[in-house]
Amino acid sequence: MIHEYRTYTIEPGQLDTYLALAESKVVPIRNDDYGLLTAFWTSEFGVLNQVHHIWEYQSVDHRQQLRHELAQNRRWCDEFLAGAWPTMQTQEVRFMRPQGQLGQIASHSAFYERRIYRCPAGKFTDLGLAVQGRPRDPAASLFGVWISESPQPNEVVEIVAYPDLHSRLADRTTAAPQRDWLSQHAALLQHVESTMLLPIGISPVK
Image (tube, rainbow, N blue to C red):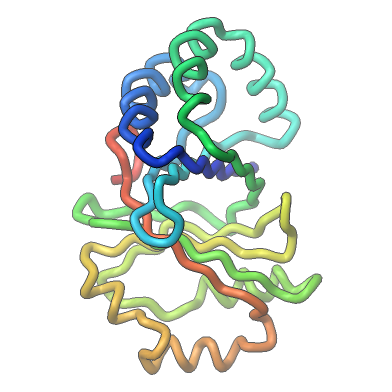
């Protein structure tokens, strides 16, 4: 199984236009025929005016086949892409391998945090295990941990759901459990970045 994580940076002032198209066209046109939609968010902290979405495929070859078929779908090209492309500044694609099953997220979750951890070459397996075991506030729900395959190997992606900002602040990096975890695994960590995400209406996880 492979997950494709797509990040689009939208032109300032065009996010509503893009989201209206996504909400009205993506699921009705694609259904599950061209990959399984796993999650769909907008960014709220970090880089703004971004959308983040994850698609599931059996393999990279399976993804290539379905993307080719999607490109032949005239409704997709005419009703979605024709309006969505002019709103975009950049598109980024990341291929990731999930480490275990994705978590079941409670419906009361308010927002998600995506973290990307970069490690020394060849240490991604060790870092993936360390991230899976990272201490979190009891109210937090682990959505998933992935090892990145491309375009940047030696990275681990973690997504956690929080019911409120208070629960996230309990996991701040200066809190004792987080400080101890970072100290324990410092040799595996070269860089850590965080983005806060809000699910949109068509997202399978809310």
